[in-house]
Length: 485
Ligand code: ADP
Ligand code: GLC
Image (cartoon, rainbow, N blue to C red; front, side, top):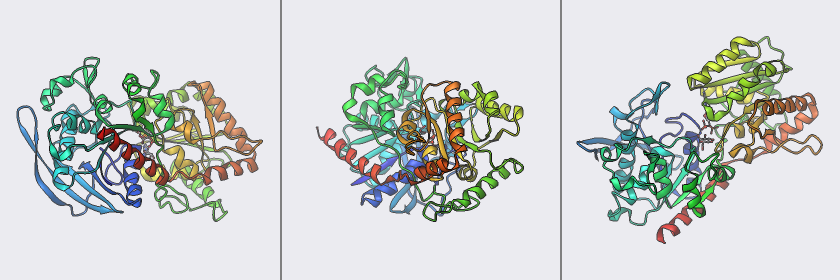
């Protein structure tokens, strides 16, 4: 099958979160199954390309009162996957992908509408696929355009679109004025299409027009059909529940595995039956945070995260005093909303030897935290899949998670009697529940033999992409049937 991936980020070219990891790995897994995959990405300032060739020097993108002209660069074929980049410096040559800490870029509708139209125009010349696979709101206009402005285009007749929701909290909500600005018909502004409480909602458009909708875990696919987690789009999803499903993200173990991770102080693996390297990683991690004198016997609890409300850090704030009295060291790396950056700074100031904090984005340090920590904390309010808890398993770093979305689907509670399970889970979204769960983990940590069994269970888990990639292929087939009617 020929598949075109449209996404706004992808490792190693651009990244703000897990979407980039998925778009970096899933196409490769599909290529290994024998499919031809082409990935289209915006070319941002942070996108480093070696000697790219311009394949389409000028693609015309209409806006209300003017045309803009972007180009398409050939990024080459890597591990069987073809990469193209949409280049338009006035839109993409910026410090960040979507906005600054003060807010989103106001021209995001134009930026991503250009990107979506460019993907369609480029595909007509570089190869019309059997399937478009689009990801998140930035690509949501692809299904919308295909079924409106492009409905008469013979090139795309019967080409289905699969749309994957990585996070329904980000919808692309704009003033209705963007419709004429982007050359989209006013008839889209109705409750059954893109209208959403007086605004235009790009993501809603994708949920209405895509042939099949997936999300990144089974649990989340059900959660987003409820008022608690659907962010107002639960009704749209429920109305098409027969063509919505959840496929758990996989992990790229070439990047995230302690037996060959290039960022960590010492390698270790279950196969070698020698986990001494993990202690080296712990010493290195503590040194990175200026805690070389800390007691090595204290468990280190790691956090690597975007600092946003979704991730549940207000629960830590609720019980910080009591957490600080527990025998642990908390090590956090993250950036994002000012509110949470300040929260972590305050925790560090109040308890400098208990809460070690780095504000920023640092991939190497993220790997060191995975390897050097004993536990990994993800108290998310909601979590479509979550990748860090799955990475943690492979590093023998035991996840403590709130039972939501992919966190619930990937972590099994540890039972010291049966010696089954891979981590610790709590259900209620309260600081007390988090504290109880952390205490449960500390209690288990005190039993060294039990903890070793728990680490073994975790490290043995395999979340590689191959089985999820096969599930996507089945969804592509299903989308073709839906399109064919
Ligand atoms: P989300 O996509 O919601 O941010 P995921 O758990 O799916 O959550 O993926 C997060 C990805 O981003 C992981 O690869 C994680 O290591 C990385 N990441 C998040 N914040 C940082 C940071 N501050 N520095 C380095 N990597 C980060
Ligand atoms: C989103 C979600 C995260 C998921 C990632 C990749 O950013 O917040 O849970 O793992 O996408 O699908």
